[in-house]
Amino acid sequence: MIDESRVSGGALSSDGVAADVALAEVRRLRAADRPTHGGRLFAYVYDPAVPGLDDLAAAAHRESAHVNGLDPTAFPSLLAMENALVGAAGRVLGGGPGTTAPDVVGSVTSGGTESLILAVKAARDAHPEITAPRIVVPASAHAAFAKAAHYLRVALDVVPVSLDTLRPEPAAMAAAIGPETVLVACSAPSYAHGVVDPVAEIAAVAAEAGVRCHVDACFGGWTLPYLRRLGEPVPAFDFTVPGVTSISVDLHKYAYAPKGVSVLLHRDAALRAPQYFAYADWPGYTMINPVIASTRSGGPIAAAYATLRHLGDAGYLRLAAVTRDAVAALADAVRAVDGLRLMAEPESTVVCFTATGDGPDLFVLVDELTARGWHTQPQLSYAGLPASVHLTVTASVAPRVAEFGPDLAAAVVAAHAAGPVRLPAELASLVGALTPEALTPEVVVGLAAGLGLGADAGAGPLPERMALVNTLLDAAPPALRERLLVEFVGLLQRPTWGSDD
Image (cartoon, rainbow, N blue to C red; front, side):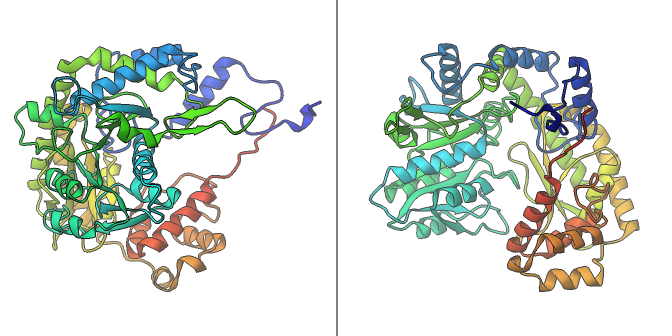
């Protein structure tokens, strides 16, 4: 018997609360979040500003929220919707009947990271004779490849990108391929800077070596084909390219489906086969999983299906045109401000810029933009690449573009007036002397206090201005950054015990 007197605190109250009370609590907590609509958040969420789309997706999600993707024979509705989503993605990315890749197959996953992990798993497991498998990726490849390598015990061979083009050289990618390489990867486009890697050349050197080539199109796979149809000079990157064996595309990005739905495509079923996991050597049901999760809610898949059906091909073409125009206008706004420069000419849906030698402190600029209601994504310096500001542009940004230019110019003036951030001497000394191994939770608490985050990092919200925090992280080498943030997030993620209320 449960002692109900001990069931208290957090989300679990002793007697429960009314439905409207619970919903009000959720809404109150959501009030502290960044705005997911309105065209002022340039990262994390994707908003097409299509009236009624949220309600449609929520209704579809509700219809299938309790459907379990574990057994497609028990829930054929989910199987039908998954197959339809894979077919749609395959068509958009150059596969299907009547193409040079007629046998494309795929799986629906929870997001781009899961898709990339599975692409690496399929490549690794296709070669059981290779006992120390390796994958080759550009330095600009998404961090999920590093996560996949870590989880799957695959070595990661990272090829530098040009400081000018922000792309890897195909010859350098070819030189990194060895007898234990099971996969070569490239991006269309890279997340950080929005440039498309030389996919055709990289796929060719991979094919010559007899190695799979995965194109991470999680970010751009649903926009680049439409931009090409609009007349933009999009290079070949999909299944029309010989040697491309798999592609990932996130539907919760520019297909504008709710989180979290991605599709991993393979050129044929034989390439996908090692992706599956099956296990029958126990007394329960035989487990057969195409993806990492076993139990999967049908809600996100149904929401994505309804979204694609409602928007249709013409809708996506229109949204791509609106987004393209917003990207061009934002890039013009950056060019018009002294002290800023584009990291690359926009090729997709990203505007990325940095400061010139006489420009403002970039992290102070980010804070000034935040103060004006624009939520951007600062990116730290890396291997000769300067710190930068990343803008993921969606269709909802278009109506706000005219406001951004004046606000950006004003933010630059304010950042110059504020001056660059200087780390306190004790913090600079500490970061210079710290090693990841020496970092303890106690040291992190001390650093948090020195950065104005409070003695207990979980005691309250982050400060409105983050320039000092970003400056400290930028001064730390990557391994120390990782440990700092792991320890700090660990302090944030602590149980809320609450009361019986």
